[in-house]
Picture 1 (cartoon, rainbow, N blue to C red):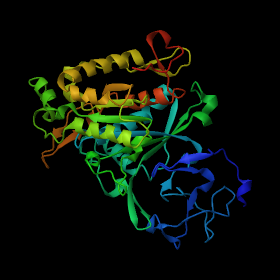
Picture 2 (picture 1 turned 45 degrees about the vertical axis):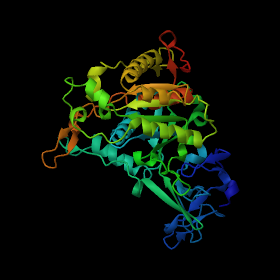
Picture 3 (picture 1 turned 180 degrees about the vertical axis):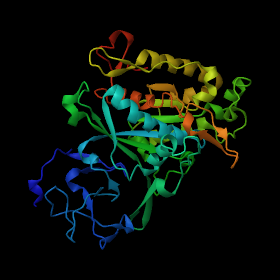
Picture 4 (picture 1 turned 90 degrees about the vertical axis):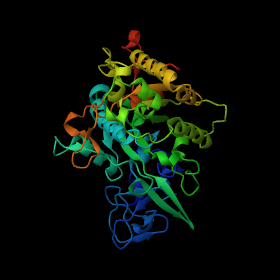
Length: 430
């Protein structure tokens, strides 16, 4: 079947989520399906060849030179696999960073799990994996936390690595370049969403990047290892700050918490140093000058809330139902009260973190989260501290992504004040 007889609603240009190169969608390459077509000059000798098709089957899929219909697409520049959603939905990039042992892996798994639960129910947004293979690491985390076959078992997630399955290697002539693998999610308005009539225009491909804390060491980001270049195009940045690793928080919690994370877990790194390095790279990889600030949100995600809750108190509901649309909207009054209260605590205990965050963005939020809702316990067999799978109850984990979308995609997620929950408004600059 000739290509010109196959029609679909495509973007004119797209950005590769792997190498961040913009390309015309008609230049996309297909990944050959036949087992004899191995060996690609960029993807490597064990990868199927990438090609520009001249034949298509009745479903619009490219046919390789061996006559097999192909299913997978690749970027024309780096030749890495991309989901088809790249060509149809505008991308929404979110970068997540944090120091080793800050709880980022647990938070990421809980965030996605709560997105799958809360977005369709509360915000009428359908969330699905764009590509199960690309999301397999994150899906395995979700399985361990929320689908454990032994509900009385103890769970410990592997930390984000600096090599291996988290990354892809591409060969450019004699230069090998390592890229981080993003996680992909299609986000579409449901039939009862307040903008359901604009589904194709408003749907987004959410691309989430998770870097190991070691990636923010000086010299870790190079031409051959551009592992944090996504910071330059991200619509929002989430920095995971672990209060239990800060000695000043620990002193403030003395006698108020018996959580081992407060009392005897190791402190792995100066967290504000990683935040400062992240901010420097945002400037380096974007068009921001040294004195410029952006209106893209920076959200300081304060992890392990269950361990330091006694310094703060209970959290309110972050949303309220709109009587006009039936959808829920973010309750900005409550979210900003929580953010301001947490900012005050941080200003007292670690003011350098607040100062650094406000140097890059006019939209800074401080959001407490608990990925598990329960303190880890010691495994009698290994001596490690693990989470009890049957006690996991995430708290506020989806709020940072909702905040990012309320600012950068307000037609998908509405935010409102107490007086205007019927209509919803874009959040005000802070």
